[in-house]
Length: 244
Ligand SMILES: [Fe+2]
Image (cartoon, rainbow, N blue to C red; front, side, top):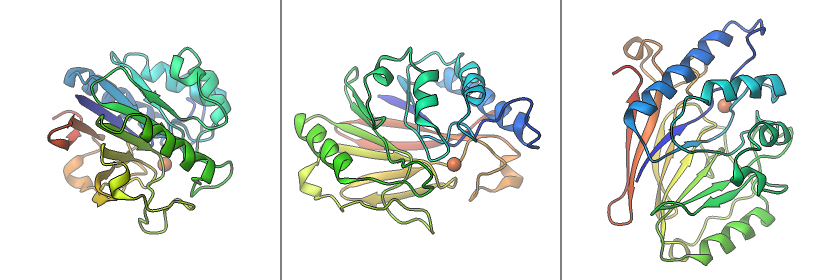
């Protein structure tokens, strides 16, 4: 299975006086074109889709994502307003099925996808409470032998001063089917082993707020991740520079 990942686009309305409003829209527009060329099975969006959580920003986000040819699965970031995000994407069955927490499973592929909600209103660092941990435990125990990909906005481990509170370090043996964990939030690329699986944080698609990239070389080209997944070989990730 091939999965493309988008994160931290921080879209603004065209009328915004923010100097990067058009640049950010253009970054996402070009990324969508490139993703379609790579023809993944699915696209995962790990949050901070817009800057202020406003309906007008979500309307623009929808327009920018409309050309995507493959199914899109979103989880919220701390910049998102969950109500507005859900309303903007209410035509998506998985979105309609969520409750207080915007989290769900996708059962349509060889690899099971599990989107996790790590947000708490007005809390930049996010939260992963006992209720959500219980949901994740129960969800993983439903299909213990099926390769599973988790995706979440906040990484569940310390990266500088960005972290999620309230996590328990999972027992590796309890969920050995987890093939990978995809995150956003931090805006710079990180790869590490975590709790018996491979974790990836991708750089922000919005090039004005991304970090940890050689900008002289990247020349304002957005960078997203393509993940090849299988139950046998696990997670193989490639950083794809738009326009290469
Ligand atoms: Fe962000």
